[in-house]
Length: 119
Image (cartoon, rainbow, N blue to C red; front, side, top):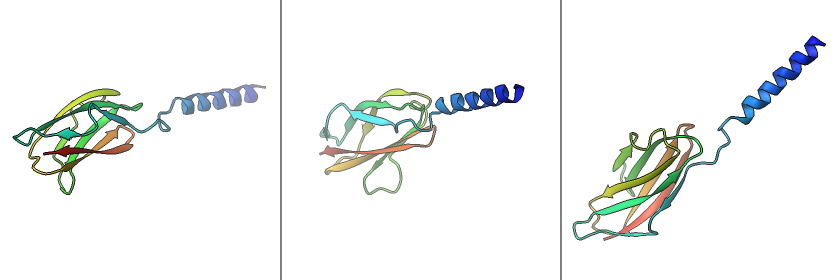
């Protein structure tokens, strides 16, 4: 009888721990304040919106399309948040430019979105 009770407790504990796991959580989501942006006469645009993640965020990486190096890596203000209202200044817009936004949570799940900025 002790064996049966022990097995039931072990099974119940395993199910409880597995049900509390965030591994199956949805990937981070992002919503932008505007559908597209228009840079000012100096080629600057302030990108704003909201990020939500069931698992705490790790970082946000912004790259201009066609560039091999990130324009900005935000691993400080976004880190450890589930909800994050962001504001990023994008500069150097002289032609239609797609901004690639990669959002990583602490389970290393990544969401990628594009945002178009017109000059």
